Length: 199
Image (cartoon, rainbow, N blue to C red; front, side):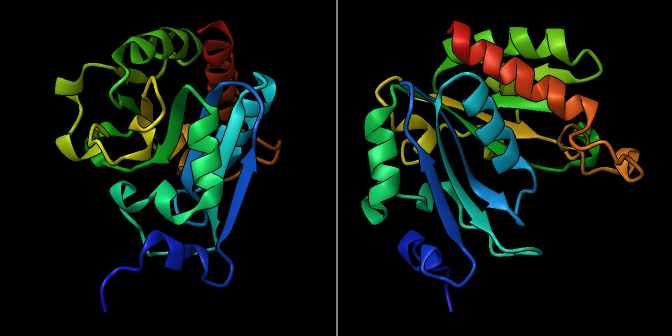
């Protein structure tokens, strides 16, 4: 059996869509919940703090089916279509884990002006991380520049940010952390919200 369509994925038990339409700047996390953990929490919080719009897809705990971004289509979701139509520009939050990039934040997507704007905020807020906003420095499969990737569908396109486990609070560094969101995650959300508010 092949991969489901996006519509079929949304119909599966435990998979939920979320959408909050506010400003014309948007945050997305369609691999959220139990798939790329904390991405929906980060996107939602950044959107709330900057009065931006938010769209997310939450997967149940320990979810393993990863639908490629190019298969996430507004033609198969009226909620996603409404979000894409509402915003002018978007930041899509993803999670990744590669041993050689464990402290790197990758800024892909087609809106390179926004990538540079975000990079400045992220470098100031997270000096322990390397922020890569040159596409040549980002692995090809993590660049997010395909025309069907939802990050590129709003009128001004957007930025795909790939976050390693540590900044999402899900690495061994934080296993005994009991204070809610980790300091790194709080700093990340603040930087994203500030960048959205000043763009």
